[in-house]
Length: 295
Image 1 (cartoon, one colour):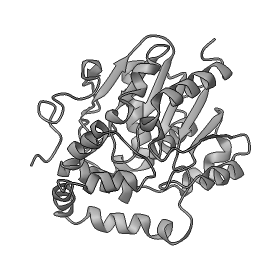
Image 2 (cartoon, one colour):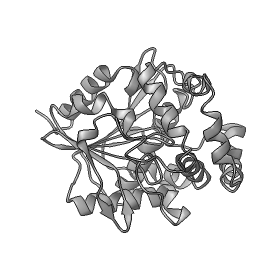
Image 3 (spheres, one colour):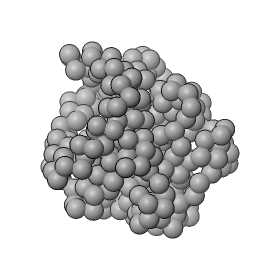
Image 4 (tube, one colour):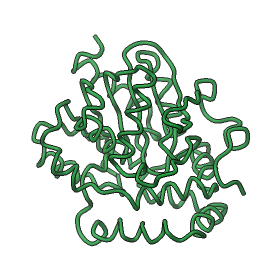
C-alpha cells in the first residue's frame, strides 16, 4: 500500500491526464490541470477529494473558459506541505494564491465545492483574487450548528495525531462497499468510475492523513465574521438532497451576506457537480454571463 498517491500508479489513467501539469511554488510540487481557452475559471475541490471530482465538468467548461483545477496541498497528487499550518483555511488560501501568482493567472470566475468554497472566500477577503463572481457548490462556509460542529475540530485533531489511523482508514477503504456507503452518506449517487477513483485515493494513507490534518486545522469562525465584507457576488448552488452540508446552511450564509443568491438543484446531493455535470456546467455558464465574464 502506497503512502502517497503515485502518478505512475494511481495516476496511470487519471481523468483528463493530458491536461495535468506539475508546477513547483514555494517548494511545493502541485498537481494542476489546465484546459481550454477564454476567461480563466478556477475550480477548487473539497476536503478529501482531488481533480477527479471535476472529471466531467471541467471539459464542458473548457469549451468557453480556460480551466485551472489544482489538487489542494496534501490531496491527490499535490505534495503534502511540511508545516501543518498550511492545511488551515488561511494556509490553503495563501498557498493557492502563491500558485496563481507564479502562473500569472487572475481568475475571472471561481467555483468551489464544499470546503473549496471557503478557501475561495478567504482568498477574496485576503485580496489574493478578485473574481467577478464566486460560485459555491454545496459550500461549507460556516461552522456547523450544534454538537457536531462544536466537537468537529477537536475530534479531527485527535485523529490526525494518531499515526496509525490513516493506514487504518486506507485499509478499510478496500472493503467491497466501504466507499459506496461513504458516497451514499452524502446524498449523492455516483457511477462506478467515480466510486473507483475515490477508492483509489482513500486507499493511500498519505491522502487520508492530509485530509484529517486539514479537518484538524479548519476554523470557520473568522470567515463567518468576515463574510459580510465579501466583495464578489456570491452564488450558493445547493443540492436539495445534500446530507453533508444541509441545504438550510445556505439560508444561514445569506443571513450573514444578504446579497448572496441561492440556487437549488433538485434531487442532487453533496456531489451534485459529479452527478449531473452538464446541468452544473450550464448553470455556471449562465452565471458567467450574468456577471459579465461571458457574453
